[in-house]
Each structure stands twice: as C-alpha cells, then as structure tokens.
Length: 407
Image 1 (cartoon, helix red, strand yellow):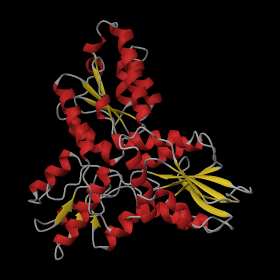
Image 2 (cartoon, rainbow, N blue to C red; image 1 turned 90 degrees about the vertical axis):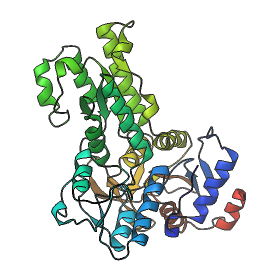
Image 3 (cartoon, rainbow, N blue to C red; image 1 turned 180 degrees about the vertical axis):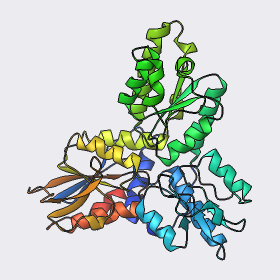
C-alpha cells in the first residue's frame, strides 16, 4: 500500500504505534476486534480501523503539494477537501479559497477565475459539467485532481452499466458532493436515479411492480433522476452503486431488495437479464471502518465518543451504529469536551449541538469506545483520548500502557 506525505500535525505517535502493531499482527485484516488501552480507572476501546483512508491521504498530499508548488498563485478548492472542519480550516489558513460550499452553492463566481489560477478538485470528485467549465477557462484540472480512486471506480462501473443497457440506481444523499458527481458521470451513458435509503427504495419498487402509477414516479423522485429517464422502460433493468461513504450493509440490502423485486416480476430464471451484480464497487475503507464498528459494539462499554466533521456521511453512520447500543457523543474536536462533567456534542438527527451534563458514568472503572470517520486525523483522536484521561486519578502512566505496542 502506498504511503503519503501528509503534514506532521495530522499524525499521532500514539495512534500510529497502535495501528502499526495491529497491522503487523493482522496483515490480512481478519481480526476486527478493538484495541484495548487499560489505564485502570478508565479504559479505551479503539476501533481496529478508523481515520484517514487511502483517498483522504491522497487528497491531502496533493492539496499541500499545490500550496508548496504555487506560492505566487491563487489556489481554489471546488468545495470542501473532505468533510472535516479542522482540515478545511488549515487549508484556508494556507491561503486556499473555496469556490462552492458543500451543497454546491457558489461562494466565488467561476467568472472570476483566470488561466493562471490553480483549482483543486476535492476527494469527492466533481461533475462533468463543472470540469468542462474549468477546461473552457483554460484551467488545468488534472494536475491537482484529488478524486478518490474508489469514487472513480464507481464512476467506471456506472458508465459500463449504462453501456450495457442498465439504469443506474445510486444509493446516496442527493445533495452530497460525491453523489452529485456520480450522478453526472453515470448519466452520460445511461439513465440514473438516486435513492437515499431502503425506504425510498421500496417506493421505487412500487413503480417497478405497478403498485403505484408510473406517471407518479417523476414527482416522487423529482430532482433525483436523469433527463432521459423513462420510468416505464428503465425500471426493468437495474444496477446499484453507492456514494462510497454510505453504509455498505445498507447498499447491499437495497441491492438485494431490488433483486428480489425483479425476480418476482420476471422470474428467477430471467432475473440476470434485469439485475446486475455490483458488489465490487463498495469502498474497502468504508467497509473496514463499519465492520470495525460492529466489532467495537460487541465489547462491554459504557459510552462511545465518535470524532469527525458533523457533515461527514461516513462518520454519521458510525454514530448511528453506536447509538443503537449505548450513549454516544459525536464531537468534531477535543474542545467540545468542556470539562469532566460537560460535553457539547452534535445530534445528527436534529442537526444541532446539544449540551449533556454528567456524561461520564459515576463508576470505579469505565470503558470508553473511541473511534472516528475516514476524514478525521489521528492527532484528533489522540487529543480526545488524552483530554478524557486527564479527568481520572490514579491511572496507569501512558508510557507503561504503550509498552505493549512495541514494534
């Protein structure tokens, strides 16, 4: 696996030792059990997989390379590099400006761009229309294109599905940068439609089996289907791909559901003519992080702390999984832990920060799950762990605990 040159302030000596120790002991990633750091009065359960993935590290390396190579030029990002406020804040401090917000709203007009400007395409990728606009302005788009290779893999699969006569069902959030980009690329070769979740998939199925009039499809999925989509024809031959940060299990559940719907309509002997197997498009990093979360939740724990950007899709899904089992606090920095009694955390259901008092259980010894999404630097996990550790007395020194992770 390639290693990347990312700024040292994103790294953590503690977390790096743990990750390297686990990697050496389990190079094939067969063991998803958490790492246990036992300090006595408090113990941390660290997810087997978390933090910057291949695509994120690749994007960060390219972005800082652009800064280094262009000291006298204006540098722009199409939108957020990744969904982490600290990473984006640091890029802004280095002089990078954002052309759009995360929802595609214009912050700086494309008309203000000149051929001398540098434009970085974020890890989520961008639409064909925006890329073409930049090319027409004689702006180099490939040199600092940080699109994740696994996102591009989804685009290639979508394009092939269209060429083979399938309509592409994209499991994703319609306003997410990556889904907008995938929708643009998949619509080039064939019809495409976006579904947010299994519930919306069931609505789509109602049109496939004739439970709802086909004419109602266009209102039900307004803004989520390509211009050439003929629901009467295109819902009879489907392939499913996803926004890579969605729950892989949910994507597979959606694919399985649509497969069964098409079997019921066309018969088990004919379904392969109407449904494409696309399991090979699921992102390995998102899948690993989610499997590691499931393994975390098998351990005995009192609370969970999940660190990441509040608009991070993959982090929100980890929070969602943890919330099903135990009290879970979603924070974007260690500063949200105000003191040993109070934590200011994000409720992703209401999209608001809330204050919780007495969040640490009053017990002789407590177990804390600690994890994060794919866009969170290891240094932020270390900050959170050390801050929490500072609230406990008579703990085993960190140096002693880390002796168990000598390489």
